[in-house]
Amino acid sequence: MIRKLLKKLPTPFGRAAHRRTTPSVIPASQHNLRRERISKNAVNVVERLQQAGYQAFVVGGCVRDSLLDMTPKDFDVATSATPEQVRATFRNARLIGRRFKLVHVHFGREIIEVATFRASHADDAETGLAQGDEKSRQSESGRLLRDNVYGSFEDDAQRRDFTINALYYDVSSGHIHDYANGMHDIRERQIRLIGDPQQRYQEDPVRMLRAVRFAAKLDFEIEQHSAAPIPDMADLLFDIPAARLFDESLKLLMSGQGVKTFDLLHYYYLFEPLFPATEEAIEQNPDYSLALIRQALANTDDRIREGRPVTPAFLFAALLWPALAPRIKALEDQGVPTIPAQQQAAQDLITEQCQHIAIPKRFSVPLREIWDMQPRLERRSGRRADQLLEHPRFRAAYDFLLLRESAGEDTEGLGRWWTRYQEVGEDQRRKMIAELGDKATGPKRSRNKRKRKPRTAADS
Ligand code: ATP
Ligand code: MG
Image (cartoon, rainbow, N blue to C red; front, side):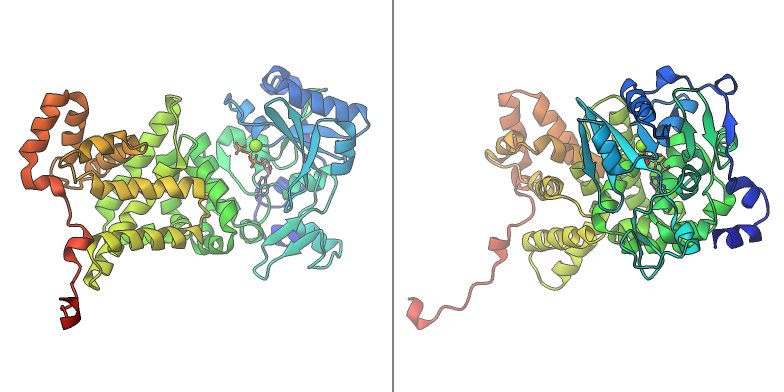
């Protein structure tokens, strides 16, 4: 089937480019990847598998990144050994994964991920494997639910997502095996899907997110045939399990290229299925919403560059913030008092968002605290300001306030006030509180507004 589809495409997207049955083998003298760049543990895994009689290569992101002189995040190994055979070769190996069965070989803190050569679904169809087969299952839309059909080295190259991710490095010979013209695309700085883009996105819509992620990370272009179907297919992401999208959204937005990645996601209509409520807020109030999101991501990118800690709680608080105010207002318009309206809107928005991106409790709880502290930062009378300063979430809440202001929100100088309050001594602080007068009480608490029932004779 894939052949038929590929035949329709003009070269270099046709069979000649992507369905080579023999790889182009690039000897060590013709590429700049040196064995020293590969983690010793990955080399060890490959060599031991080869000694046990299996084929084994390092593959994927680590080959790609090393060729581009970037430091790989982790090292993946592909082998002809089955997961059980890999496990039998190493004492420190664990079988993991449902969608993909993998083996993790542990070396202290480093984990080498070892995957058995697999065939693509298109090949399953060719070999007559029925849909619904327990090893490879598809949803109605053609999405691969499981993908554990083992295959040859050649099959494995074809089922990978992008040509630049299908380069296999043999640490023993120094050869790079290139089945899909990946070296060409590394040189041309192109993100190009292997095979028919529409079909490959249909099988796994997350590949659209990966295209954008690699384009931003590597500063590559998405090749036009790979880019063209994305806007029309973006909504397929609505069907992806929310837990997978949580992992993917962290890789997208917390890898140091957040601003660029966000702009690409938005450009390709991929942001909406990830953050539908925020997309609506962007449409209604683009200047403020986009300024806030980009500023939050720019701060995150800076912190990552400087090696400072970043938390998904703060970033998600910012990404969802533009959607919160309209919801609070809608509830207030229905007569709900301010504070319960804030609570309910926050709760509803997080619950709704978790249907798309499953934010774990350890992040959604502090996210809520950052939001809940925003109106509290206005109420500074008496000892309140000092109590807030002691709050474990104060620093995040204060940073969040500054972020809102930098996006153009008018808080009547609240950020400046808090900056100064932290700098001055006790006497000055008392003076600052006294000078606030009425302003220090902030929004009225709901209990002030609560309507009392008319007294009855029984009350008196
Ligand atoms: P990085 O680790 O920098 O995020 P990577 O390319 O190594 O990038 P991984 O998610 O670690 O990405 O995947 C390892 C390899 O597995 C990829 O290079 C690619 O060959 C293959 N792969 C991963 N996800 C998919 C997918 N959704 N469809 C097809 N192949 C995939
Ligand atoms: Mg990787």
